[in-house]
Length: 366
Image (cartoon, rainbow, N blue to C red; front, side, top):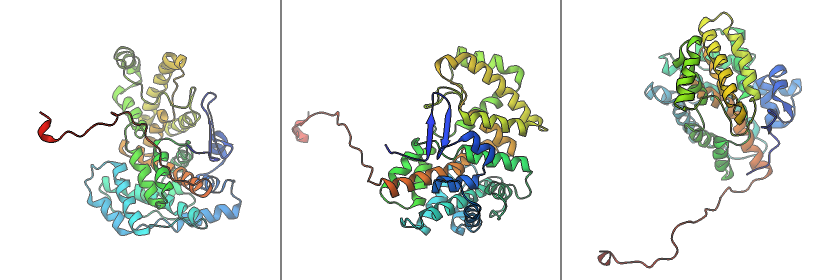
């Protein structure tokens, strides 16, 4: 559909790179703020570049009252991505920025910051807490978490959040990116393009995988019950093992390995997280033994839910966190496409209906 210099995937060997840098190196050495610059500008930032990104984020957390009021006016049980769509619809109507090469990347950084504000307040609205705007800090991860939870968040949770943002930043052109690209090809504003992407992400065949994987662990309940659950549900009833398999990877998803590492760190000192991690590790072993011959291995969503839970979020926030991270990747693709290879995306349909037919008047149809 499009050429890209953003993300490279080798599904056979389990390789993922952003702008040529391995996901392992970026997770080990980089920060999400660096990834923002890398994805938008193509190179790792110098100190002055990085400071400019941080300054732009810090000055962009504010959103119109109408967006926050809309979130709080809707039922608490409203679906998270649906709430994000609604809020972004407000931003699209109010801001409606035109495409200008000199401004597109700054607008993208503003949108990333405002996404953090929207998602933090979706959490707060659902939990019955008052609105709170993220405040400047050393990282978007900390600003987001402390706005959501309303106070200081320990460093290991902030680090895990930063890593999650990096790992979910981009993954080529799945359905949500494609939907947003179609909107971008019409020169719709960047906020509206995010609405299009969110609409595709809301579908259960694209979003929600981390939620479903984690629900399995909750259903199993304890590590001792994994084997029986696996035999009954996966082997006998042929149910799908959630968090396993990927349309691209035929080996371990490299992001999943990193998520597992941070799940282990969050499990230290937290018995509930440790329980779910033990369940997941046993389930992973059984799954690999059963399905690896078919090229089916754990994907990034298998352990990410444990990380989100360990940070302190309920299940309903998991896909929203994915969207917060992926917003940067979406925007980078939209800008790359419009600025470098723009043409209206207008596929043709292969007609398979009847050939020419003669019209029969109503009174002659029997």
